[in-house]
Every structure is written in C-alpha cells, then in structure tokens.
Image (cartoon, rainbow, N blue to C red; front, top):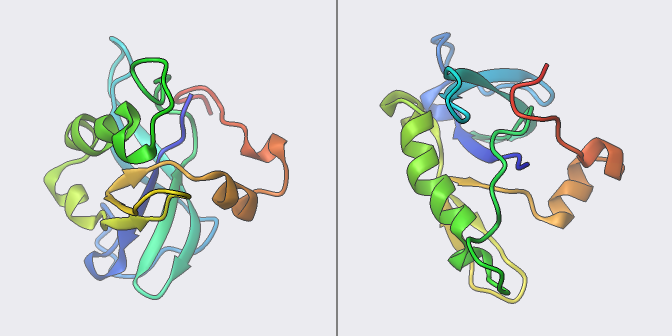
Length: 147
C-alpha cells in the first residue's frame, strides 16, 4: 500500500472552496478521486503535513493503491522506478482534474546517492517519514479509502 504526496501551490488557492489561502498543518483537504479496481471513484483525502511560504505538503490520508515500487525485482533508483512513472503520468492524469493539476507544484526530490528528480507526486523518503511521524505505528497506512 502506498501513501502519495503532493505539494500544492498556495497562489492558486485551495481546491473546491474558492479560498485563496494556504491550508494549515493538520488540516484535511479533499482533492482528486481515484477508482481502485472496478469500484466507483472515491474522493481522496489529504492531510497537510507542512505549510510554508506559498506551498503546502500533503499526504494521502489513506492508502490509495497497492503497487510495487518497480515492475521487476531489481535494485532501481527512484528516478527509474515504475512507481514514479505511474504516479506522475497515469495516476496524475486519471485522478486530478485540469484545475486540480494546476494547483500541484512540481517539487525537487533529493535522493541519496542519485541526482535530484522533479516530480508532481511522490512518496516520502525514510527521513521525511521520521520528520513528520513520531513512530512506526504512525507511519503505517490504512487500506485504500477506509475511514
């Protein structure tokens, strides 16, 4: 199960409510919808992990999809993995409207031992997970769309 992360630009405002303000840390926002398997599309809830300057870092509140990091067993860097490609292409296109996509800020991701990547949607690294969550229990994700 994976939790996805997006960085939202405040200069475009919040989605849906017309408010042009940065959301607050801990706030829950709804943005995008995703169809898991053959089930109906359900809205995705996002927790604001951090809000600073003109951007907010959001983490999906529940797991969205059960997807492997890569489509074959091999040591693969984030820049080359299937998960990154899927998140920033298919998932981005099918999950968010054009207006919602315009709110998602491209983020430079620093990868240990690799060149940085620029992604719209990404996963937290281990150091970020430790920064935002106190222990392993808090770092666990709930199954997709389970309140």
